[in-house]
Image (cartoon, rainbow, N blue to C red; front, side, top):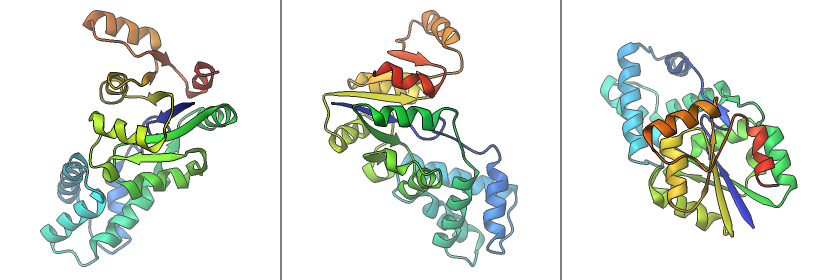
Length: 223
């Protein structure tokens, strides 16, 4: 059996362009003023908690913000509103449903392998009605380790026992090469396969096992 894991942000879904607007709208829902200083504070705190693989990084960052600026709403309420808005602001990447439908019809078992907060990442999948495609959703916030750490790939193996593993992702350095290092077939989703080959040759760095320009090409790799 083959297990095919997908990265989430940037691979299955496109993140919103304007996080400052999301932050402002989320706080406004609770009657709280948002400005550039508060957004910068929140963003720094969020990335600190994401880097530490906190199980609830959004709530932890909002708790930091609430303490620093003496805000009235609870951190949980602020985080809930923000993650709802963030999920709603994401878009599916082209070809996602075509690829997942084709793979699900074959003999591949599908999973998600993503860095982030477990609740927020699963909310994105649910918002786009993707959850049903996947037998496992492996999130750094649950595991306590994030890509490129080998431990999160080990957690993926534990979640779906299989004979072969593949990882489909848009980030070569953080996602694809670390997956290759632990025995996954690395599939890089990139805008320009030819350009990637030139960069790889120039830097003498190891290339992905396969590079594709569209998720629609992924099922053919495992036909």
